[in-house]
Length: 184
Image (cartoon, rainbow, N blue to C red; front, side):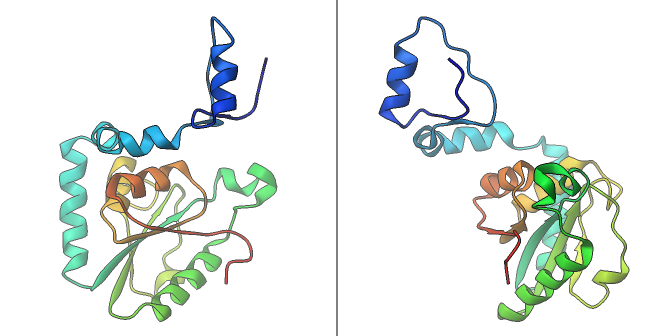
């Protein structure tokens, strides 16, 4: 029997598994949030990038903290989001800078935004907002794991739905501001 979603916290889904001698699980539809909560520290240890990337990220974020009260990570994801799910989570760079500007105005204190992206970004739209590009590839010279680590060290992560930024926020126990159409 093929199902699109399996929640191991749901007793009826557990009964479904127990009714078979062999079960194959794969894909994003498998859930068990109770086990994630129970084992979150072990999961964090296992997804932490190696020391080389973490050291570079810590140095980079430490420099940002000396400039501002709050360091806010932003993931711009555009390449596959242009067409995936009918472009539901694709936003142009101008829309991201509008969100950054709005968040900056609403939050008291000095903020600096660390912008990570999987595609090269023009610098001009960011000229009037307190921002710096992450060090990882596409917007920086380093490895993409540096951007992942940098997002995990921020005080807040602003992102469309993305495993990359969600896992980074999980790693650092950082709140997320989700971006989607209709967010004002």
